[in-house]
Image (cartoon, rainbow, N blue to C red; front, side, top):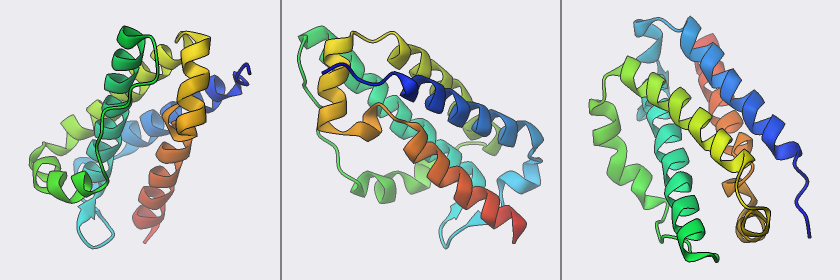
Length: 145
């Protein structure tokens, strides 16, 4: 199976959505609550973390030449929350943008056979727009009040 490459454009659009959001946010808006325990900046740090996790996975898969997924579970969100909160808000925003852009580039040029395996394992590893857009939607809703 050859993966439909339209994910490249969807990921790029999601990254640009983050970039546009980050460029217009004030430092005060980066501290705006998003849910009970998160802020806009924490949400952006979260996105950077999970995109970096995918980058690590791509490194492992490419090095091994086969699907090899580093094990991690969602409890990492709760474990990481105090660390994400400690990151200066503007730095978290910049990390979200630069990491997303780096991952988009990497995915766009990743070996097709390995990309197919990754997608079959978990399409969210390839279609990063799914994760990014969900959180940007939450941020935008929180900013509107």
